[in-house]
Length: 293
Image (tube, rainbow, N blue to C red; front, side, top):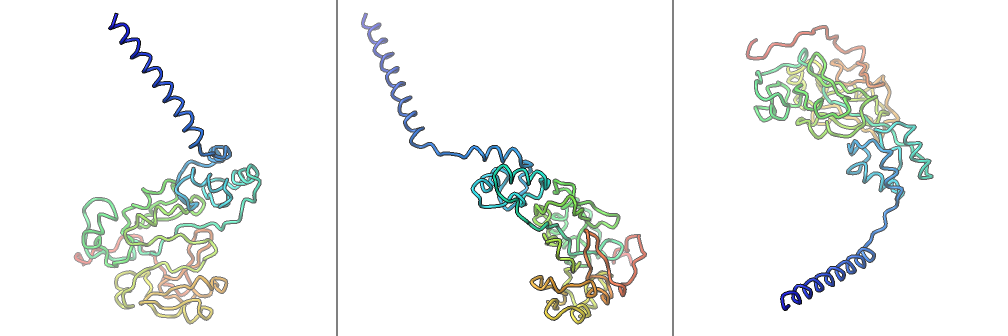
C-alpha cells in the first residue's frame, strides 16, 4: 500500500512539475519572442541562394533582412536578373536602385608566351602553393602564375584559363563576389566599375630595364601615358603607371596610344585594346625557362 501511495505521489509530483515547466516555457516564449517581418522569408525566396557576398552582406538571408529594413537596394544583388530585382522592389514597394556593375579585373597580361620563367615549378597545382616555393618560378615577382586558383574558386564560371595560362574574365557572368580577389596570392585581381575603362594591366615594380627583360608586356615606367593623359589622371608610382580614378571622367583611349609594351589598355565590354605603338605579339609558344637558355 505504501508503495502504491509513493508511486502515486511521485507521479503527481512529476505531472505538476511538467505542467509548471510548460507554463514557464509558454510565458518565456511570449516574453522573449522577437518579431520577424514575414516579408524577410518572401524576399529570401526570391534571391539566388548563392551567398556570394557581392551585395556586401554575409549572405542572402542577411541581404533579405537589410532589404526589408530599407538599408540597401535590390539592385545590389548582382547575381539576380534585373527583372527579378525589379520584382523584389515591387514586393517591398521601393525603388530597385541604380548600382553600377563591377567586374573582376586582372592586373597582368604576362602569359607564358611573353613572360619569362626563371625555374620550373613541379609542385601542387595551385598558385598559393607555388608562391611558397621561391615565388612560383616566374621571373616577374608580381606576375600571374597561371595555375587557376581563381578559376576553381569562381562559382559562376566567369573565369577561364586561356592558352597562355592567363585567367580571362567573362563580364556577363562575373558577379563581383570577390572570391578571385581573395584567392590570388599575388593580389592581381580587383573589382572595378565598368566605367573605369583605362586600365594598367601590370603590377611590376621593377625598374624599366629589368621589367622589360622579365616580361614583354610589362610597364617600363616610360611616362608616355602620364604625358598624354589629362593633368592629374595618371602618375608614376614606384616604377609603375597608376590611375587616379577620381578623375575617371577625363580618361580617353588616346592615353594608351604611345604605350610601347601595351601595358596600358582600354577596356570595353571586357575586351582589352592595346595602343597602336604597342609591340605586336605573334608568338604563341611558351618562352624557354631561363636556365634552359
